[in-house]
Image (cartoon, rainbow, N blue to C red; front, side, top):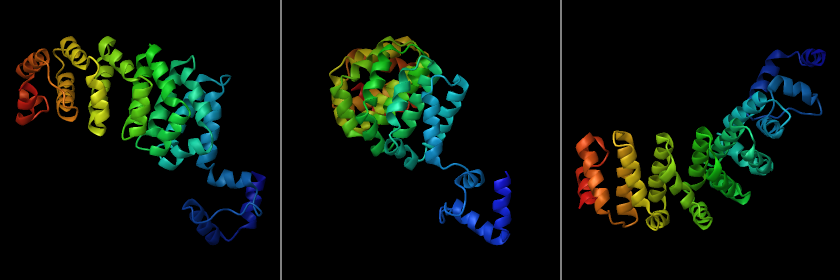
Length: 291
């Protein structure tokens, strides 16, 4: 504090000091470290984002720190990497290995937080998607999805997987090569969490619209049986029915799929239950789906 006071006294031209401070905050001027102690500059201006990111990852990876501190660090990091430059700096600062290493942390809170950070970093960010895959992040997500029992963690893993696959043909290719599709199909077949099922069905629809190859791969699975199972399991869930029907129509149009008779029966039942006008398809789409 005494150093800070001395610095202020030595720079007593308050008007000029104010101008310099505002210029620094706008990024138009950098403090001259030869004139001022860096610790004093940090005390006045705060730590830069790169320093905060590095310290956050160090805290997250420190298994001897408290769970509370590590969760706070995850929240702070997630906020920081919402900016694309900071997200790309995860690779530039070589932070991916330490971060991905915590996907297998014993604490579900840490696994969930890391998956959330990963999903935010790679979303609509080709550079981060490429870096994530190069550090075997896709492998880590798929391995964990096969065994994860915590529903909240699993939901964030799906969020991260969607983020790395969307708008990224190379990521789709890598996903299919790693036999990732059966992992998601197993969720449709086995999961008893409607929120998770909605996420997977919605992701299937989005990825098919982005990439015809994904729809073609889906048609080689028992996708129609899985969609039938979802409709049978949640016959009173209007939102679920809407998402399943939309995905079915996308399969029909984007991947040139043929709608099986048993699915048409269930689609008609959903239309009778909820009303066609409430299920997100226009008349022409209904005709195509039920033809």
